[in-house]
Length: 168
Image (cartoon, rainbow, N blue to C red; front, side, top):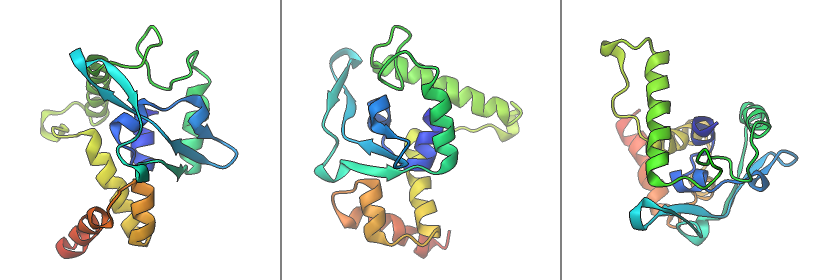
């Protein structure tokens, strides 16, 4: 569920970690981004407002993500989607362990072969991938800015012009 949210929404790590059941609207097909988790003293989580005022947004969910989240949420007994085993918001250490587990599963699915192993996969790569998908779907830069939650359109333009200039 964590990877699917990253892949299909381009959300920032802290935004995904702060998601609650109430942020997922299966009727409208949107995820509401309205808070974020930041790691502070001793890597402890703190709920904060998102990075900028433009970071507060609704992101549409494709049907495959809706299906994944409906099934996943059905397995939870907490309000937050991603928690420690005892139901608390993840610390940085618990997040890193979760990400390492995901990373290992991806490599395992690739056959576990040293020659085709993923080596530099980060959460932020999914955000760039989402921007790439928006670009190739013909989403205009202003709409992409809103979906990505960028406060300055220059940030979005830099990503979009990178694709055009590098012909990727």
